[in-house]
Image 1 (tube, rainbow, N blue to C red):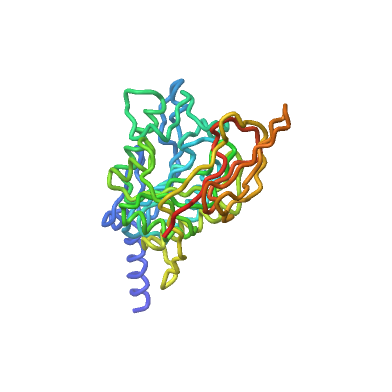
Image 2 (cartoon, rainbow, N blue to C red; image 1 turned 90 degrees about the horizontal axis):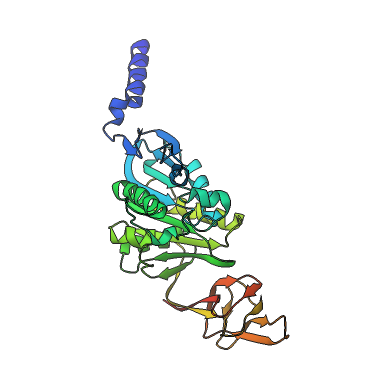
Length: 342
């Protein structure tokens, strides 16, 4: 009797592990690769051998859970110099166990792969990839990359998290950007849990804006500065993705998810270099500070004349973006203030 029972149990285990059993949930095909439930793969979504193919040949990571669930897509490295997101995507995927996963995680950790390798924000054709979506096949290299990626996103993604940092020697306080009219995306933003949410549709051609318009709830995580890894912001980003996955019931989480309170900003303002006041900028505040109207937030010194230009806050707000000490010219964005929240 025990021998017969043991045989039955072995048979059930083999059946559960077989492709036929998995077909109840089924495989997924991404960039021409078939990934079965319980499987995890990493591969390039280009693959063509040609001179230009090197600019199109970026990696894609796919983990197909044993159990049915939503597909969460993670994009990073759209701007090649924004490194935090590439490591967040890598860690979040590496820690996704398909045996314990309900649904699918699809990560594009270095969308602008050539830019990541060379430290360039832009694509090889000098275009900003995050203004090229949804892209087109009969276009520039940037348009082709955008089309290739966006096709996979439309075909497979139920939710999207796009990962970024500040740009041009500016750092961003950890924040989530989301379309205020998308209640599902707003819940993703809240459950990401970084405490600051900025409402806005985003610019045309950005992956978040175009995915949202295509009906895919999408958010951006912005944290840190370009061209370097910030381990604290990376860890916060991974925790945020895990929290979103728990909220979507893709992984086990606490019985009652503790969602931190968020300051939801409905308006932000930039403080810029006054016309003719270029020079050496030295900030006197830091990310996360709250400032009052007319408070000094930095000084610009003209190195040829020693003229000092005091930079003041335009209104009360929280510093959510800040330029590093550097050379600046007229109109350069120095400080990003969150000014109205609910």
